[in-house]
Structures are given as structure tokens and as C-alpha cells.
Image (cartoon, rainbow, N blue to C red; front, side, top):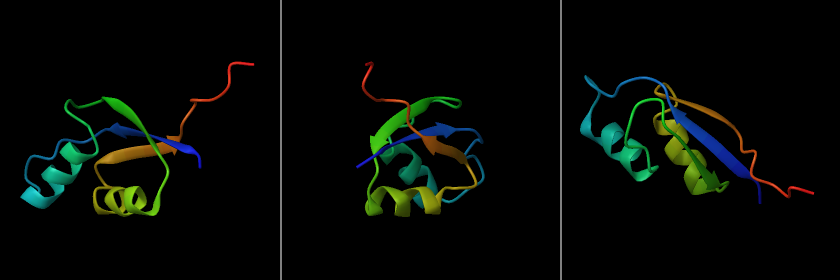
Length: 65
């Protein structure tokens, strides 16, 4: 399984509480913060719900060798 880096880019002000809760459950606390998670179908569903508020890219977490 790969890693996914999620960066919170747009404020959730003016969006419904469900989307704000999803941002929190992704582990994002501040605007422009980036978190990494293991890729899964549940994570992809959460990202799809708030895709207009976040940027997603493959994580860099890997072997340093």
C-alpha cells in the first residue's frame, strides 16, 4: 500500500458541518497543513468528499536507501 499526502488548501468556512468534520478526521487542524496517510478506499472516499478543499499527492515517505 502506498502513502498519500493531503494538504488543506481552502478554508471550510461556509461549507456544511459534515465537510468540516471530514477535514478534522483526516487529521488536518490548520490551513496549509500537510498530513500523510496509508492509501485505502475509505481514505479515498473521505478525500472525494472534501476534494475541493484539499490537494492530494503521492507521499514521499519511503526507504532512504
